[in-house]
Length: 169
Image 1: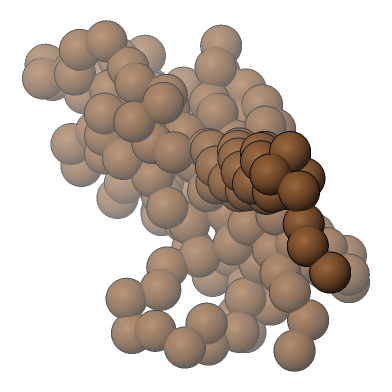
Image 2: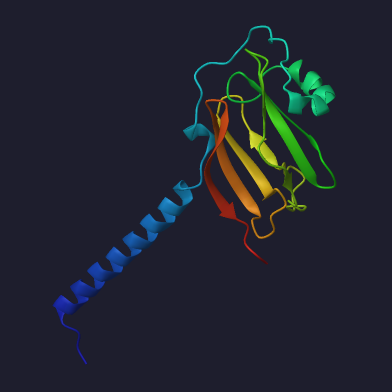
């Protein structure tokens, strides 16, 4: 059985179109994961840190917050991000504005991230030059919600962007 030249060309065009759609879909999926470089901040604070301003709920963690408030900014230009343990494989934390001394608590605990198979794994990722923060694990111990959770810190609030669920083995 012979295949006509028109059928061959149509087949090649169809195969090329299918490959293009597949590659575009893969590229879009890769680009949908937020990256630090996509959330830059303008400038970095280099002045003297303002005195710490503890709210009523912050006093329970005043020792950790006072220690952190002495550090240089490490997050989003002028903030100091700090975390502390709240049990086995559990973290909570806060962001301190170095300019004002105000404390903004991370609105959930983070737990159950497991080993993640790497010595360099950290459950909270952030950068001085970006307002993106990535939490890996389970927020507020809600089972079934394990994964990477992407937030920005804007107007003194943690704003959720997206979450990527951890694949089950």
